[in-house]
Image (tube, rainbow, N blue to C red; front, side, top):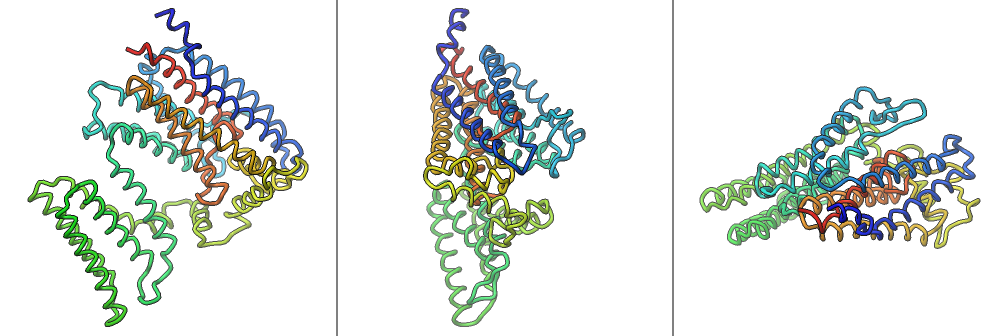
Amino acid sequence: MDRRRGNILQRLDWWTLLLFAALAIMGWFAIHSVESGTIVSAAKVGQSGKQVMWMGISLFVGLFLLCIPKHTYRNLSFILYSVTLAIGFLTIFIATEIKGSRSWISAGSFSIQPAEFMKFATALMLATYIGRRDFKISNNHDFIKCVGIIVLPMLIILAQKETGSALVYLSMFLVLYREGMTGIFLLTAVSAIVYFVVGVKYGGETMEQLSINIGQYAPTVIIQIISIAIVKFWSKDNRTFGILFIANLAGSLLSYWIAVYLVEFNIMAVQYALLVFNVIYLLLQARLRKEKRNMWVAVYIVLAIAFNYSCNYIMHHVMQPHQKERIEVLFGLKEDLNDAGYNVHQSKIAIGSGGITGRDALNCTQTKLGFVPESDTDFIFCSISEGQGFVGSSLVMLILVILILRIVHLAERQNDRFGRAYGYAIASIFFLHFTINLGMVLGITPVIGIPLPFISYGGSSFLGFTILLFIFLRIDAERETAR
């Protein structure tokens, strides 16, 4: 065993390390480029030096993590998970409020964000539980425990008013999907987003022919379509599918035709009557024909209706004012280029001005003159796009995509569920950070403060990402000797 441990460095995946180094170096050059010549914010002076310090600390921690055997990570996962949750909970009360968030612990000029380190502990805990010999994702007890492992740190981070960091944990549900979780849960999550977008974006519009709210009518139609499709492809109950399909299609079209061409009336009553019919019929089929999945489709319809009607309440009474403004700007309900929409507007200008090969360092007016706030952290991609153009920004995206795909490849070659689940956890985290960050700077997702892995300035995020990656490199290096 000692001889095998001595060969850990030889079994490391050096391609992943190379991708890590490339991203770290490109990130530092981007931070240095923003810092040099910036005449607006003196606070940015010295940030490239601080990033080098954090890169050095992260590399030292990473090398230390490579020396820890795989079984130790499994044995310590519960302790690490508990400690990081405790620190995160304590942060709510002792942290200094910054931009409405209480997620940073500060001591002089030194600040750290505990939420970044809850990610690796949660991923380890989830992987350890999935790695148990008697684990079955189809077992309700096991499934609920996995959900609890993921949701608990989310609730703590939400209490810190750090919505962006909390959403990262949703990516770990992809791990459960890889381990056999039915796709109905992912469909439910995606459809909830659709209901929210349609309900909020078209909540103030009415149909030309009828005096009905599009934000209420459209979601009911979508609920009908999705629920009937679930019966067809998940329940695989062709008889129930046929009856629901004919009843809903005929009822919807006939009510629309009558309201437009014969007698105008509120066809929303018909839509709700059809949904009630669907629920009752599905429950009867579940009871009489022992089609248990039909019962869950009926539950989905009820929850979807309830969620659809809660969207406006969430928008106006749950979300913070700045979150509400960002969503309104994103959906085109409000134009505010001087406040909520300022960052995205300036970011688009910076990306467009970079052209194919980028602008000369002295001519990067958007970032050098400080028009783009957070140009070295959450919006660093637009700084790269302005300075290096389409070529440079595409190279960054390509390396990040290759890194994520490489991690997925390494996860698939693991010889146990623990290693595979942990690999998919960090691949999912990196993927969500990558897609949401790019969506922010391009104006297709809300601005929620998600850094670009290994690129954005920030010691906590860089160290957190490094810990995630290097633990997996050690796990992967031991895959041939795992017992």
